[in-house]
Image 1 (spheres, rainbow, N blue to C red):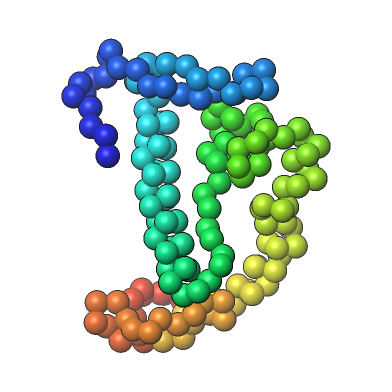
Image 2: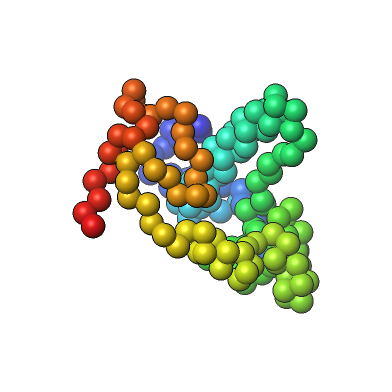
Length: 154
């Protein structure tokens, strides 16, 4: 991770991308005003490392599927990109294009209903698993799989 010599960051700047008039532009912003983006960069880097690791596992098992992180502008509900639409690669979309394609990338209402239907019955007994969760091969910290990891008061 990056480190900063000046912890008050009064005189430091950060190069940020913005979306203005339908085009990406980059600007130098006072670091103090860009801290969320700095932290987001670190988070995205962490996530990217995990994706690389999983893709190696897929490859080692002969799978052709690959995971890919979406662009940070994709499906933003807050922040500087919240009023705009982008595909997972960060390509700008019109509102009409977004409406036509959003369920190619995000769960639809039918997807959400299906998930709720398979998660309808809670499972509380140690050693039993909901039908949508694969049981582990072994327990955590040498505990048996049927160990009561979480107390539930029913």
